[in-house]
Image (cartoon, rainbow, N blue to C red; front, side):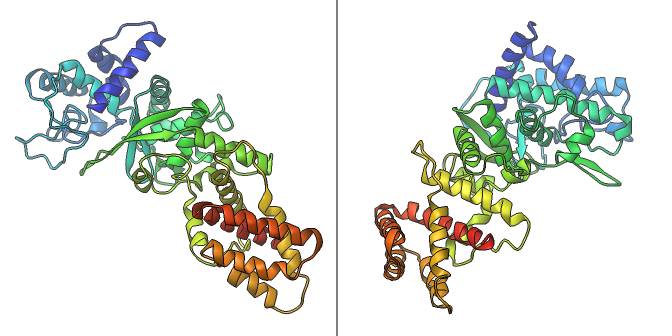
Length: 438
């Protein structure tokens, strides 16, 4: 099971880093149990497991040390005497002999030998799952990522044990893992002197008068941070969901270099523009399930969700709302990255074209040219319709402007239909931006 595989990868890396030789059971008892369950607030809730099966009158928050130890021994007994099932072997099939209200996930019909160590490793691996928005988690079988995730366990436990944070909700380890990695792997955001207040201001926690809890990170934010760790790497993630109904998507390649490419293009286009980095990154990425349907997660999956409506009809950015400037930065960055994904050079060609088109529109009175631009040029669904509009425009130009539009006509003719869709949308956005600033 993938939880066991990831748990084993982590434990090998842990033993090497800390120069020890803990067995899976030793690590589970001395580190995992102590962090996750040996406290009034659990870090992880595993349905039907010994840690959540309470005797009459028992509650997790009122258990004493001996009662918590008893539940650990109950787990040991199950591991040693029973056929593994999802109630104590995480990621394994649900029991067919016990009427638990749960389903199976991450399973195979192959007969795979299972040892006691595998079961403890499955717990460790499950605790390393990275929760993202959309109800899914991701497991990466990678030493560096799992070690970094482990460092976050200690931080989450510290906050849960803090008496001044009594309203902080427990049992959110996978959600926490996502936020921790997105924050700690981003050198532009991470501050070694961070505290709860800083993390709350950074959007890690949601806090009100009655409750504090970990927000779920968007997968795109996690993606950008992982791309800082591995700027030129492809890494495979296992995408799944544990819950009352388990969900399994499977193994998905993550092309992390796409995140670095987008960041590099943004910097070339906009330099050191004072942009809210977290809000900017959150604009990217379709729903995680839809992204996985593409077969891999890279530039295509990072398409800003809000851009779709502008690519499908005549609608354009109005810049009447403050957040539309940030949207413009994100949309333009993605469109240019898609257009130049196989090229070294990144040019802002469409901005100059937009200035020319705006100059053309302002060169005559009435609405004829405005209608031509909005209703024919930018509304064109095909290269042919777009070129037809350009032919009308070029007749009324002379000199350098005329040659520029002729060259544009030739460029569009050579574009693929996919490239044309990106190009025409980008030109439309740049026209609206130039119009706003004219």
